[in-house]
Amino acid sequence: MTALTRLTLSQFRSHPRSVIETDGRPVALFGPNGAGKTNVLEAVSMLSPGRGLRRAAAEDMARRAAGIGWKVTAELSLPGNAHALATWSQGGSREVEIDGKPQPQVALARLLRVIWLTPAMDRLWTEGASERRRFLDRVTMSFLPAHAEATLAYEKAMRERNRLLKDQVRDARWYEALEAQMARAGALIAANRLSALGRLSAAQDGAETAFPRATLGLAEPDAPLPGGEPALREALAVGRARDMAAGRSLIGPHRTDLTALYAEKGVEARLCSTGEQKALLVSLVLANARALAADEGPPLLLLDEVAAHLDAARRAALHDEIAALGAQAWMTGTGPELFSTLGDRAMALRVSETDGISHLAPATL
Image (tube, rainbow, N blue to C red; front, side, top):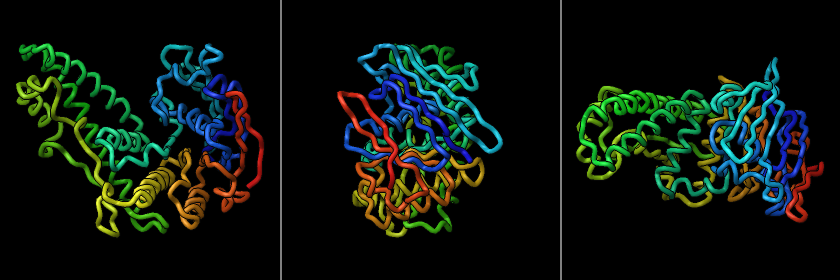
């Protein structure tokens, strides 16, 4: 079993102190909008590298009334093992401890895979490419935790190269080391993304599911570069004059876009109905979870208001797939009826709010 058996939120958004103890089953949180349900899911998302499911700055997660920072702790149960996790911020950068020892954020991904679906992601297929890249990189990181380090290395080198470009620096020696770093990390990023798409596709093939299959691909603004690292390094060198005119790097994996096709209908995701786009997203999240469960073990699933745009039949199918995966899903909704088909396969908590403070109470579905 991979599950959080205890979760504590301290001064985290609307939760001065909330403690949730579980037995490993999925967790359904229901209550009115603004009660603090999503805040619980956001706290769980902070047990993975990055800025969490809201992409908020660390200082914005603290209860403003307290002004003392925030902390999230958890007891993680793994097959044959257990770990104590903690992450917090007191106004500065986010800190992480695993079993009482300071660790970098990327160490969390080596212990626990966390994947999520939020209402903001419903616009994934109609927004800009940057959101789809971020989605793709989170999926990739769930399979390959070291992908996070590659993206950080690439972005750091690119920022420094862009600074040289904006300053109109023309000495090639200033660029060569940075372009070598970008090419090395960029080639790894591209290979990792292709590997992740392959695993998603394999997890969709042959799966009995009520959700549509998505055919995925990568689109490049320029012709794809054959040859990996050497080709990218050469392209960056050749493109310096063009990049200098633009003031930024115009080629590399930071320009890649994720494409999706509703396979059964042969329609691009961006042209599908709102309900079809939601179903495609759910399909990809479930495929991600199936692929992880087959190799690394079930991930934690964070499904915020997932019932939106899903009819009763698909809600029931989603609940059945979650149960079959053996994954601990943390789900939110406005009422218990949205989770009724889970029955005793999940534990339920009613979330309410009084004067800006969230309260949790055990409930039944």
